[in-house]
Image (cartoon, rainbow, N blue to C red; front, top):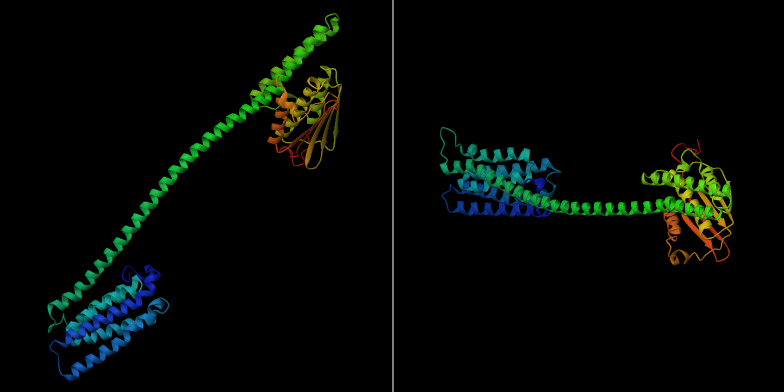
Amino acid sequence: MWMAGLPKEIDARGERLGGPILSVVSLLVLAGSTVWAAFATHGDRAYWTGMLVVVGALAVWLPLLIPLFPRRHDHPVLTACYYAGVLLGAAFLVGRADLFTAFASMGYSLAFALFPARWSVFAVAATAVMPLLVKGGWGPDAHTPSWVIMASVAGPMLYAAWFIGVESDRRRRANTALAESNSRLEKALEENAGLHAQLLTQAREAGVLDERQRMAREIHDTLAQGLTGIVTQLQAAERAEADPSRYRRHLAQVHTLARESLSEARRAVQALRPEPLDGSRLPDAVAELARRFAETSDAEVSTETTGEARALLPELEVTLYRVAQEALTNAGKHARATRIGLSLSYSDDVVMLDVRDDGVGFRPDAGEHRRTDGSGFGLQSMRQRVRRVAGSLAVESAPGEGTAVNAQIPAIPAFGGEDGEYR
């Protein structure tokens, strides 16, 4: 752990244990070298006494690494002084006994542990050169055994090779961990691709369902209502066969309704706005709708607009127009109303459409579910349209008391201008 990498790569546990471990190992190697040297041939008493004094000093000096090691990067001068002290002591001992070369080799471990990479090279070089300079291994009078020189030269090489091996192993483990991470990422991407495909399928299904509902509403609001008007006018024409002028008027209404229904059906397929809203204000389109309805029915229809009329988003205006159209159809076909009132109210935040009639009325909570002729789709269509634009629809009715339909939608101006005025 304490020699597994450069100082900046030592983990928290290595920072705590690095100093004590290096100190203990250095002391053990120093003690072993001293004992070994004691059994070898040595000089006089003074020669041996000086060596023991240096050994004792190193025994006191080496443990100073314990408090210094965690602070070695903050105090580079103290670190260099500590290493120089160890190196000088080792040089003195190697000069007295070759066996202390083993202790001098501890300088390699200390060099890599104490200094950053760019400085540890110099410390290692100093450790390698020190025994050669002390013993004069390269001089003309060299008397150093060959194994000492080999140890001094091969030692750094072996240590560097070992260090590179440790680094290679560390990088191999890092690459393995990276490969595992990539494998997990690939699996996650595959899962995401599956989820994406599932979402696309659901989006297509939702789009198909939404388009079906749109077409159902458009068919109900165009073809169904147009055909209803045509049937009503044909029935009225049959009853007016004795009066040629009325008969021809009803047939003319049939032709008009047929052409309008065909045009609206084509526009519905192309998802276009109703023709009455093209180039017209919503209040004018609703007033024209009321006028045409009054011509083809026996009901008296009135319209009213309050507030400042302004252009809304196209979808909002289509919603109010279709609600007014459906409410009029219900009032004439089911309620058999004789008077119908339509009112558009513009305020700052909402636009309200009220349609009231004096027809036979019904029970709103059960009427659209009890019909079996398909007419109950009208209220459902109105609610769907209003909900799609974040609005609300309220229907008030009771048997014999007429019906009131109220639709409220947000007053979001059209994109044509900031003031939202009709242009």
